[in-house]
Image 1 (cartoon, helix red, strand yellow):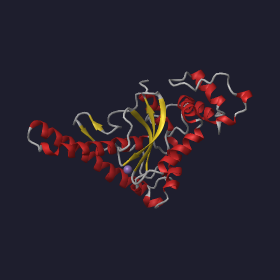
Image 2: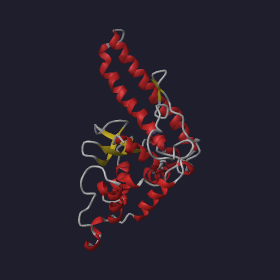
Image 3: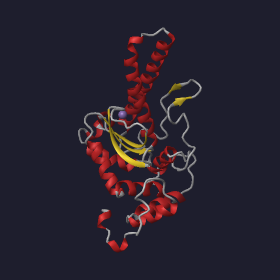
Image 4: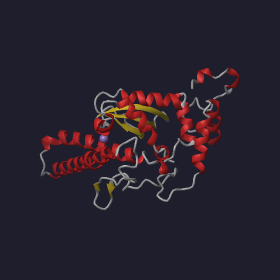
Length: 278
Ligand code: MN
């Protein structure tokens, strides 16, 4: 909906969502009402009332994101391919099992291997056994494969089958989306348009910019180009062809639209809280 279309009589005298910074729960409720986001508010409240899930995935809050879930083996001090918390066919029909298996077990695995390899080569350069002339090459490899690893780890976490996912943003996140994008619908259209317009391979992201304390939508080319320093990734859609070509061929927009059905908003809420140090 268009906030400018709200008749003056129902506009709040002072909007609690026009200034940067965190919103209190009361402000968030007022903001949602002012923006006409009653449906989002209801979903958010229903989500907050749901019982905790045994695996923690469908539960908002904090403390559920372990190193293992994010693809880091604290004992081996190596990045690792995180285990998916659902079966390869669990996101059908929106994302097909074959795409999921190839994407996770081959593409993501290659980013993990590339990242570990690049860091190991840089360590050799530090101890004098490597080729110092290649520092630029291996540094680029860290950025590309490291970006790929983190992007994909978050990608799997922010998706979930129906029984495991939070189906709407929390009240808090919904209010911030309303404040920073005008409405949830405007955010969705901006996000989808950004994803559809990525040139070549890349991502669209909902990010939290800690400098301004605001949510932003960005495009990412490859695995890290166009990244805005200091912005924390909250929700990203992979628009490399390997993410959708088997099922959707060249119809990226259809894939992005369908992908939105399997977003686990409870995890996006959790990343949003972590990004703000909550
Ligand atoms: Mn990918």
